[in-house]
Length: 201
Ligand SMILES: Cc1cc2nc3c(=O)[nH]c(=O)nc-3n(C[C@H](O)[C@H](O)[C@H](O)COP(=O)(O)O)c2cc1C
Image (cartoon, rainbow, N blue to C red; front, side, top):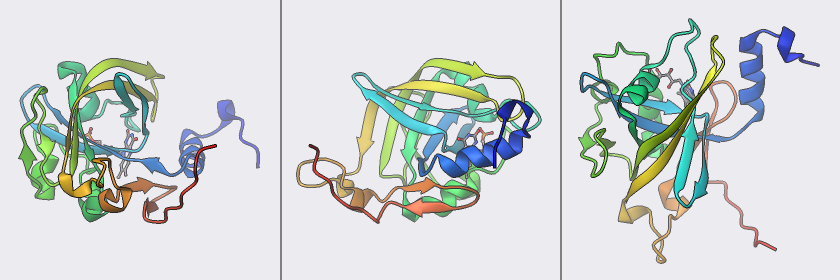
């Protein structure tokens, strides 16, 4: 099979891309709307890119009708978000929070989750998640104007809330305790419990 992207259907390109670039970690993002409604949504076009300062990037793409998602609108208006850890115990709620609700309704209510206040940003974190990272937007880079066009949000982490229960005895994250989930192709997700160790050369 050969795909010339310039002539291909965008949905086919999306499925090929997200089937190959796997597993993708999930940014479970809280933002505040201009009216003060807490928005929660998962994004698997996501990763971390440096630690000094700690920066992350994720992409709320344009909807298939070309409109902006609530998360992007909120970030453009307020420039702050919280990155919550998407864990195995919370996977069903992570998925449920991807429902496209009107902007005046909160996915926090839909999922039955609760929030805890942040220290340095206005959006709260998800209280049930063992990790909440408070972030300030550094840059938003739009890439294209059509359906599923990326909007790369680069955020700087200001504060990390980490529950003691997911730490090892050196106060580092123990992946066997945090148990994040990730996105594979289609509707498939994966656990991070199939671990193996390699020592760096
Ligand atoms: C696991 C998972 C990962 C997702 N990743 C993305 C993504 O990277 N980018 C995106 O635009 N939508 C992604 N979505 C869909 C959004 O979560 C969905 O469109 C959501 O309604 C957006 O919410 P908002 O309009 O409140 O911002 C994903 C959904 C799921 C379940």
